[in-house]
Image (tube, rainbow, N blue to C red; front, side):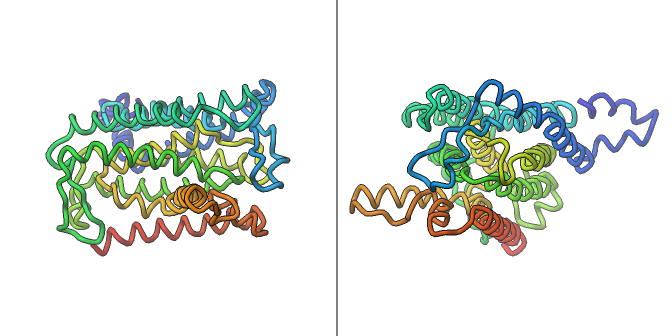
Length: 359
């Protein structure tokens, strides 16, 4: 909005030209979401406590988590709301990619909200039935993927293989089911990673820093050509959005750090996961996202392995899944698990960015 207001006035007052710069608007989009979370975080926590919107805790996990029962959940509403307000102020609202990502954020958040609402209403960890949850996720993912497919061009379905500048596979119509599975898988992978105080918030901060950098590079023809990346017209504006999410996550982490005063809930984790995957599709980084979100991949793989092993062999591979609970059950302190997973998340982000420079 600010860009549209001040752009026509640049001829009368040259300093207003800063509103054209993605870096300027991105920085203040982050500051805006950060301040919104700082200023309203306490009020949101108080309101959720008054409404008795407490987090039920699974009884088969670490015993230390039982004390967290009743901690306010659905904190993802604060993150989504802050991002939406910030983008209305600092984003280029003429860019259809901005609206696509905001739609992803809200739509996946709606599925997560229903899951959280049922958990709170029933006073247990059983939310939406697994089938209903997947149906909601697939419905949103299909709508988004079809929009990208039909508004894209011949390059949309081309899969760029990391580390190889000229190795590109045109998937054609098969790109649609591949993209849908990627979005749904990412949404669930991030959801499984939300289980310890501050764990998911910290991991997401690193992911969105990485995506902000890649968005900026992809939206610049000179940088993208030099790095052998596909140039995506308008992708630079996603830098503003990624930085807005980053600021919101930092503000949320203020209240979500140990001992957590509020949890993100499925409304936050499902929306973040789905949004990450959609950004990857838009930037044509469908495979690189497996590196950027490496910790999320490890988390969901631990769940898949655990379930498959128990059904096939009646034996468990891990003491508890997802993976972060396994290390807790081995005696690691919660803060140690969180910090070490953050370190892994940072390492994966560094590796992902290094791949861009060596391909």
